[in-house]
Length: 69
Image (cartoon, rainbow, N blue to C red; front, side, top):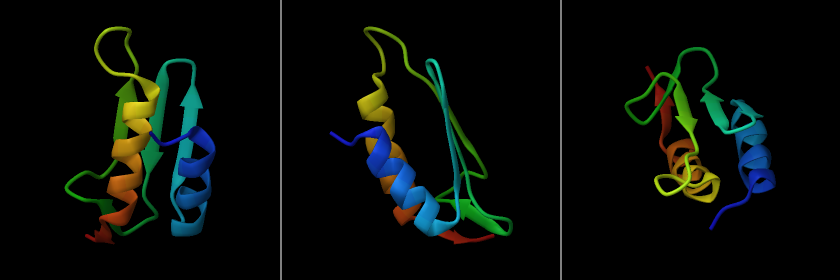
């Protein structure tokens, strides 16, 4: 399971903007890039549905899929 600090480090190295506010987790790619098939990734952690650790795992994978538009 990924941690917030792992995602923050990887996002910064890739030029992405990473935000966490309460249960909301957002990831924005640099201008002219996409995260896989997404322009932005906005997720909400919810008990019994999606944990922040699961969201962080997804974001790490999406940063690996950073590509030009």
